[in-house]
Image (cartoon, rainbow, N blue to C red; front, side):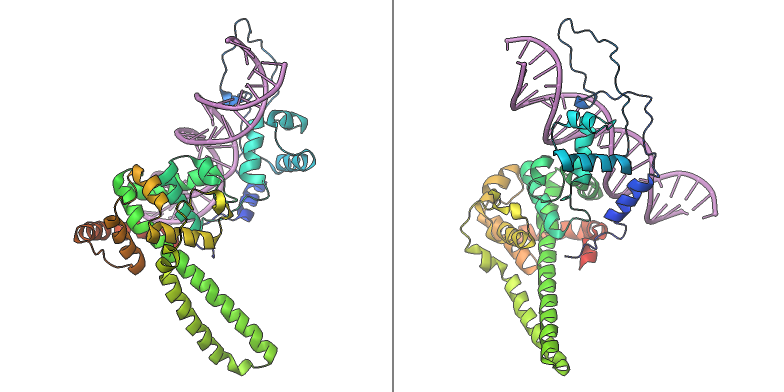
Length: 342
DNA sequence: AATGCCTTCAACCGCGGGTGT
DNA sequence: CACACCCGCGGTTGAAGGCAT
């Protein structure tokens, strides 16, 4: 999926440039010695251990310079990571081990994924957060290439912003309902649309290649029509995701480690299970947190909403959601730049 | 163009838990 | 068992850059 979510996104190049240029003071003043280890947490010294004015190496703080980055990357390439305090010393970096670790894990690691969160990823974050709360590292384990810091920032800046817009707490039932009934189904729609678009694009490419190979360029129009027909079929298939996933017997696909793959397909299936199937995990895991509908009655309402994008069949839910939706939709979605992805 | 406010995110801080001695 | 060291987590901060006025 094209990451077009933010017009003002910061590309990796921009980030690199930022780091390189260091328009921000490259190094924070070192007037204050950084407590080694524990991020300044001063462990109580055992009896008798005097706090001798041990000469601490002058430590740098603040943004990393390119040289520091190179030093760290090269050292890890040669010696591996871990033992961060030793590493910092051995590499000749005037940084705490913690700082080195953080820099590596959150920024320098080669598999760190940059750019905006895809709909898949947003969906996954929303869902996993409802299950695990602020267990950022645990959530990050299921988003390959994403760091806990990044996810945490995403949650605090984007998700909590919406909660604020709704005048409610991000952990409140009201906001969870908004996520459940509005945001998450919408992300599912985006996923489906993106998958369809991708497939359509592939079909067009494939056909163009075939046409070129056959020297039948003047048949392109017919080819496009054929591709379009196929796309309609595909879309129908996507819309029928409920049928596709209701046969899934996996009761805990989300909880299983299998979805470490984290691909778009998985997320689609996951979303399908979440919304259409009302998987057991949802009932068992999320329900006790008050997020997921507890009864078949509620689940059917979710299904209707998710599959039709229309109104709830249950008049009670329908009225509430409709009113809620109407009252907040403009602000809510206007802020949600994922609209732009469509 | 200048200014102030807002958003984003890299980096830091404080803490708890694990491990080695 | 006590202590020291280390790792990793979640919360918070503050500077850069964008945006509105």
